[in-house]
Image (cartoon, rainbow, N blue to C red; front, side, top):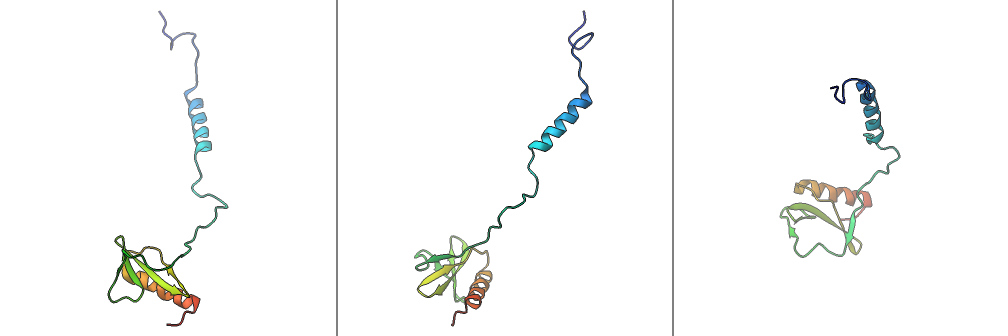
Length: 107
């Protein structure tokens, strides 16, 4: 008694199915690089003052410790500009000095 895979049943070509699978997968996959994607850059936050729970780091002019990271606050006119979070206080202070230089803020 012939089974479903023997005799005059519906046949298929294994290589054909594999090629079709590969083509479909390539169409569904995203490309590694997305063209015309806008570049996201950091825009410093403006705050009225450093938060009350932030701790001033000794030996640095503009650096505060906030949630285990180091953040610089630079006074610009009547508001503070906040840096991104850094893992080292020296990096936050360098950011503050660069902002002072770029904005031409006097000491």
